[in-house]
Amino acid sequence: MKLLEINNIKKSFDDLEVLKDISISVEEGEVVSILGPSGSGKSTLLRCATLLETMDAGTLKYGGDVVCEDVDGKSVYVSKSKIKEVKNYFGLVFQNFNLFPHYTVMKNICDAPVHIQKRDKKEVEKEALSLLEQMGIADKVDYYPCQLSGGQQQRVAIARALAMNPQILFFDEPTSALDPELTSEILKVLRFLASQKMTMVIVTHEIDFARNVSDRVIFMDEGYIVEQGKPQDVIDNPENDRVRAFLNKLK
Amino acid sequence: MKKKPVIAIAVFVAFLIPGTMTSCGFSADSESGLGWLFSTISQLSSGIWLSLALFTFTLIFSMPLGLLVCFLRRSRFKVVELIAKFYISIMRGTPLMLQLLVVYFGPYYVFRIPLSTEYNFYAAIIGFSINYAAYFAEIYRSGIEAVPKGQYEAADVLGYSRSQTFMKIVFPQMVRHILPPVTNEIITLVKDTSLAFAIAFVEMFTMAKQIAAADSNIMPLFVAGFFYYVFNLVVAFVMGKIEKKMNYYQK
Ligand SMILES: Nc1ncnc2c1ncn2[C@@H]1O[C@H](COP(=O)(O)OP(=O)(O)O)[C@@H](O)[C@H]1O
Ligand SMILES: [Mg+2]
View 1: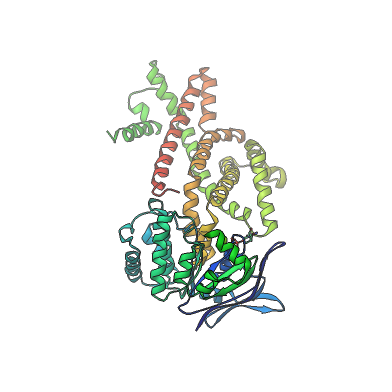
View 2 (view 1 turned 60 degrees about the horizontal axis):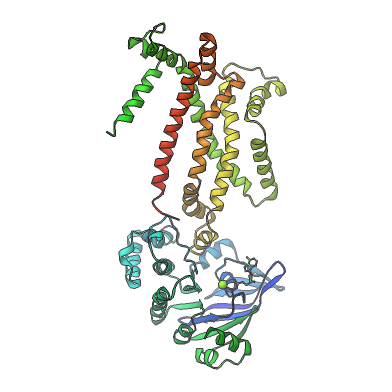
């Protein structure tokens, strides 16, 4: 089943055309990595998909729910209440975590499930604890974010996103703010989630990780998808010259 | 001993209650220096209470009013924003004393409403409140703007509504940011209450001036100064405590 379907999305900031006709669909259980040089529009694509930005043209669909349709070349969004529902489909993990500094680890994770999704507090807390155990930071429940390392903060952020029970998780360069040691902590978590068949879309510069973990790799450049396919094909034998140049630079 | 300051303040306050001094054996015409001091304080006491009342009511009204002005100042509607900006610039750009005079005499000059004797108390509270609201509005605004955009985005993706985001995420972080400038503002207010003399509001300072003139003695002014100083020590102490309490997390 297709979980996410984006068609012919366009997005400009004033005169700057950032996304120029991009279409992506993601199947349930699929892990998709998005590669590409900085400034190519990867974050903007994730921000449009997670409704942090509104797209100018194109369509967006989660499962069977239409979020926005294309009417005469312009995106028209569904009602506010419908959008609120659609937000239950996805979670987003940021490059710089964006944990709430005045909440403990536990409250960071449980506040939205309890107060937004109106789920039972005891149940949510139990679930949060088991998530933290999976992440290997169960001893940090009562800590504040400032008392944690970057890698630990990012694991809390992932747990916070997972506690909402999303069907698809987006990651925008989840390891770019971390040093190599902490990066491997996070990649381990992502590998675990992939093994659990969590649907994920990951913007990353970790080539080895993308090759080993993802089902599909998408390469973006200047607002277009220039190549996509199986990681072995795109990463080991790219057809496009720009992809080859970019990958060579990373190696 | 922890109790000592409390006892000192209690004794201090006891002297402010008219009659205490005489019943303690100090008569107003006592020749001794100490007796004179107590009689001065006793004479000042009604002014001290009026200053305290003006201070308290101004804080009670101006702090929430400032939040309202701050919201208007940050409104999406350009007209509303401009009105709020204009309000703030007038309140900050003209003398407080002039504003007090306008509030006090305005109803009479404009509408020919006769001035009542107790109106100067209300006029002082209104004048101070609308003036301090402008300053608080700008302090709140700086506090709100100090909250990173990522906090709003994380809340948005988790499904918090705009008002929930403000109440749960932004406001607590704002309070922490603004405590130092708010303390400054409160300390200024303690001293500014003396400006109410402009509209025949006989608060402590006006009273001290009258006593000094009648006795042809500078000491009453020093006694008044001492009260302002002690009061501000209390303000600084209390605000310091609150700041410490809010420091449970770091940025
Ligand atoms: N809010 C914005 N306003 C103006 N320009 C923006 C905004 N967000 C992104 N951009 C521009 O869009 C382009 C693509 O940015 P981004 O999507 O962050 O790329 P990437 O994540 O691939 O590095 C960049 O040139 C960036 O400066
Ligand atoms: Mg980016």
